[in-house]
Length: 384
Image (cartoon, rainbow, N blue to C red; front, side, top):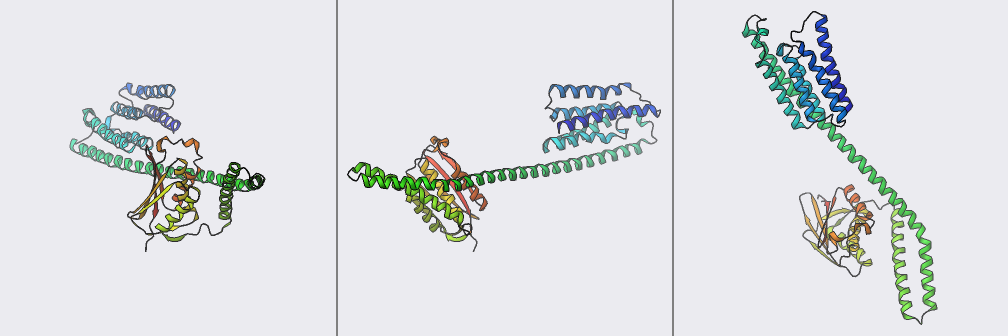
């Protein structure tokens, strides 16, 4: 974009010099020779700015310089009677493709005022060439009205066109970011599946060794108690891996089903309590509407509660209320909140939960504070 603007401005100045040379060639003498220096000085300023500040080609002051250069050029070359007076619109076009909408309309105002300024300072010698000042004034007024209409139309078209392009680019960037996140999630899912198969054998070996040691040292109560804990933890890991494998092999795990909100939250809470017996869970529902759920949605809610456990929360409170077209679920805890070191966790669960809820037409918003954290989940309401 910067090089293109530089080339355009260079061609504009060279075009002005070519226009002056053509006038001399065809015998249209330029009365004020100073006009030759206008594009030359403009080129000097343009390239001086380019080499001193290479990344400043889109600055607003350059557009003002563009307009001032055209004003001076026409002032020295017959004013508004010059048939190329429409070139005052060129800075508007450049502003429309490189600046904000507000600044483009400001440049449009300046361009229209510059036309009026040239009209006001136009030498009377130019009007003496025309018969009937009233007719000529009407002609100039009509040119000015046309200039105002066309310049405003040009501003509207360019600003709307660039706004559409920027919106499309923003959408493409969002799609590309989503694609990258999906690719990252697929990578994590592939790694998780691979780890599930790889961990099966070591966990079975640990469980067998723990059982054998328990049988060999039944007279040592403390050791047997520790081995029992190891056996239970290994059993939890095996159950989680089995659930992961069964879920990936289940062709119906993505099939949605309708369920009431209380049943869904109670089921997820019970699953969470199986591994976190010491955490208190309370459910406060203002509504008990029907929602669409599947295995992934349940995992997303479970991951949010696991994050609370990772933040050393002792209490989790779940609230739900109904909004216009959705249901809002707030999962609050009394964990570490702002003091929680995110680097100590993988951060995978929350990212997966957010992606799952977004795909389901919902959203996830996490807010941490000194007393814990609040995670707000929105789900689409089921219309009867």
